[in-house]
Image (cartoon, rainbow, N blue to C red; front, side, top):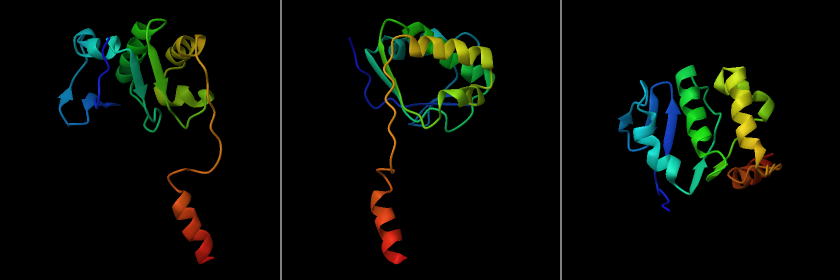
Amino acid sequence: RSVIRSMILDLSNDGWKLKSNSLISLKNGKLATFTQPVIACCFLIIDELGYQKMDVDSANLFFNLIAKRYEKLSTVITTNSPFSKWSDIFQEPVLTNALLDRLLHHCSVININGPSYRLKDQMQYMIEEN
């Protein structure tokens, strides 16, 4: 099995993008050709899901990616959005329910509460200034 390193996908209104700024359109049935390495990799991390809303086409592409990996391969998703707000992200309640059904079926949810690790040093300075 393969692990794809440093391939970070950005699902935006323009389609999937690699962080190297090479735009790859997955519309019009091209999903399988581009995502085959992503579908086949044994461990996929999708970081910071939900910071931007997805248009309907992007949400469908994301659902297809998850559906093809369902019950076969490991996927980790990080997000600050509770599941109850995911229909706002995907803008399609039926698709969101189907997506959550697949993701939550065999998953472990780890809820991390507390102060931001990234802001810990900055918070110290803000407290000292006051």
